[in-house]
Structure formats: structure tokens, C-alpha cells
Image 1 (tube, rainbow over the protein chains, first blue to last red):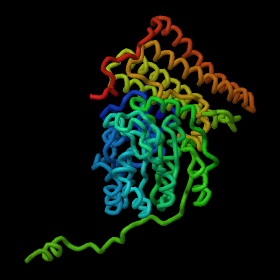
Image 2 (image 1 turned 90 degrees about the horizontal axis):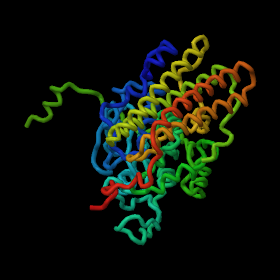
Image 3 (image 1 turned 120 degrees about the vertical axis):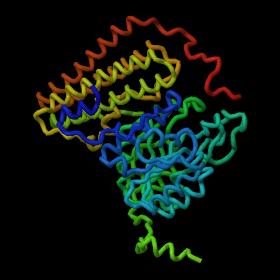
Image 4 (image 1 turned 60 degrees about the vertical axis):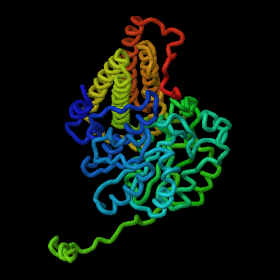
Amino acid sequence: MNETLARTCSTGVAAYEPDAYRSDIRPVWCPGCGDYSVLAALTNALAHLQLPPEQIALVSGIGCSSRIPAYTGVYGLHGVHGRALPVATGLKLARPDLTVLVAGGDGDGFSIGGNHFLHACRRNADLTYIVMDNQVYGMTKGQASPTTAADWRGSDLTPDGTGLVPFQPLTIALAAGANFVARCFSGDPANLTEILVEAIRHPGFSVVQVLSPCVTFRPEQRQWKNLVRMAPASAGADLRSAARHLMEDDGLSIGRVLYRGDRAPFAVKRKNTVEVEKLVEEFIL
Amino acid sequence: MNTGGNIQPERSLEDLLSYARTMESEAAMRYAELAGIMETHNNREVAELFHRMAKIEWLHVYNVGELARDLSVSDQMPPGAGDRLRGAELPDTLDMHYLQSPRQALELAYSYEQNAARFYKELAAAAHGEELRAAALQLAAEEESHMRELERWLARFPQTEAGWDEDPDPPNALD
């Protein structure tokens, strides 16, 4: 018996099920990869919101996690490395009626796309940015990423560690003006689903950092399951308490909304429409 | 992760069944996901076992639906389900390995079912009314019947040999 039948039998109501947001393409992530659970949580969240699939767009960059649009049945763009956010911003401004989601990894979002991340936070367009953070470049076989600890010696490129201070995405998101900030763990997908529902509903730029283990190049991340803990109760619009929590945190507290701002989302005023013939006239020499 | 404090007395039978349906649907979908992962990685024997577990879980969803037939049970995920389900320890892709043996897959499934049975028993112990307690115990008994089924399957597979995860050409090999 499948889910649709089970639900229909139990309630008599057929609706958008999580599978309605999946494509026929099967993920090729490594077994044990946290991104499977992120995909499941995302489709569960969309089913919870009952958003028509044709009203959703999912934009990604490059990397293992950025494969995600191919595995969904919503409109998708597997774009340019680090450039998912500007593409998604353009799409949202041109088509404010769509629910626009953005997905990618820590390398794509915070290194190659770091500048876009800052300005997407500032701009506060109504987007939900899901960052699957595994603290490594997995697709290129395990190099240190912006969020890798300074002393990680797992790559031949940095045999003594990078010696660099890891990027703090949520602290920076807060400082740059993101309107909704949360951290989750892929190993807690029911909670991730709830947070994604909230993030998608919340107006403005929502950042959800998902600790998503790379079991191939960072096998020690399997231990995250035993190390993560619930963050203190969900926050409101108090920027200072959110910032204080993040500054004192070791990056392993999860499962709560850390900041929920009330800034109005960025939008462009629609110009009056003109007839095509009038537009053509403007280009006649 | 510390799961203490997630099991709370249910407010009503509708509440319990709403959680049960969410949990069983989650379990079914995750078993199907695990099966898909193993198919992609050419471990067909383990994939088949997980497909069978997914079917069993969908049957469980149906049974919960039957229990809820005359009640007004919400089809939506109950608020706070994320916190509450943490104690249930559902099937998790993080536990997968591409060279996993059928026996290991069954042992994993057994541990998930054991956790689910424990989850319902704790709910029964914390339930306020007799009706609630009986429903939670009925759900626990279903999980225990899955465990007995898995025990029969486990008896058919030999113990996993040492070195099962050795791969002469591992995916993280540097070229």
C-alpha cells in the first residue's frame, strides 16, 4: 500500500503528498549522506504547506547538495557555482507570485558565493535559503571549505589544517540583515520539516543552516548525531539575544528558530505594462 | 542527542493517533528512501528488504487510519511533532553504508522497530486515560509483531563477517 492510498483510506481526502514534489530521478548521493534527509524534509514541508508544485522554484549552485533540484518535481535551476542567490533574487523579483527556494552547500554559498550571501541578507528578498553544511567540498574529493575547522587535517591540500578562522554563517547572516535564521540537523528530519515550514512562511530572506554529514570525506561527522543538542527556546525579533546565543555557541545547537525579524521583504514596484507594438517602436532606428 | 523529556502524556486519543500516523508515515517513507539508496548502489538484496519494511509500515499507517476512522484526527503534522518524534528514533539515512549486508540491514530495521515499540509503551505508561493507554499498547503490539517477523528473517542470514566494509576502490580514493 502506498502513502496516497493509506491517507485516502484514512481520511477520504487526497492532497499534495510529499511524492508530488519528487521527480523520477533517483539521488546519487553517497549512502549515509545527510542530504537525503534534507530532500525528504523539504518535500514533507511543501506537502504540509500544500503549495502547488508549479508555483515553486528551486534554484541551486554547484556541489553535491546543489543536485537537489533534479530530485524534485518543482521548477528548478541547477545554476552557476556560488550564483544561486542572485539568480533566485532575479526570479523572485520578476515573479513574486512564486515560492522561490534556494539550496546549496557551504562551499558554494559561503566561499564562491560569499559576497552574494551578504547582499542577499541585506536585500531581504522573500527567499528561503537552505544551506547543507558538511564543512567540506565533497564533490571535488574532500578539500577544506569556509566552515571547516582550522585544525582539520583530512585533506592533502591542507595537511596541517587551514589555520583559518571558520566562517560563521548565521552570525554573519544576522549582522547582514537576514530576516529569519535557524540551524537544524539532517538527522532530525521531523524538526527540520517544521523549521522549513516556518522559514518558507516567513516573509523576507530566511536562512536555514542544516548540519548535513558528509560520511565519505568527513566520516567523523556521523558522531554529530550524538553531539548536537537542542538550542534554547525559539527566539523572536530580538537581534541581540540571537547574536549572543550564536557568539557563545559551538555550532552544534540546533532545532530552533534563532531569529525571526519583521523587516518588509524587498520587492520592485511593477511598472505599467505597455503594448508590444509600442515597445517595438522604441527600437526602430 | 539527548531525547529525554520528549515523551509526554497525550491529550487525547485523536492526538495520539495523529502522532502515530505522522510517525508511521515517516517510517514508511524513510524505509522506501533507504531501499532507493541501496538500489542506486547496486545492493539489491538489502534494497528488497527495505522495500518490504516500507510496505509493512504503510499497512501500519492504514491500521492507524482505521483506528481513527470515527474520530476527527488531523491529516496535518501535529504542531511540535519534530520535538515529540525525536524519542521515536525513526529510520535514518545516516545509518547506511553502501556495502551493508542484508543481516546488518535487518538489524538496523530491528532496532528501529524496537525503538518504536518502546516509544508507544512509554506513551502508554504516561497516558491519562484507559482508552489512550489501550490504543498506545495496541500500537506497541504492532511494532512488536514487526520485531518477531524480523527475528524470523534474521535467522535466515549469516552473521556479517569482519572486514565487510573493505573496498579496494573506495569512493574517497584520491586519483
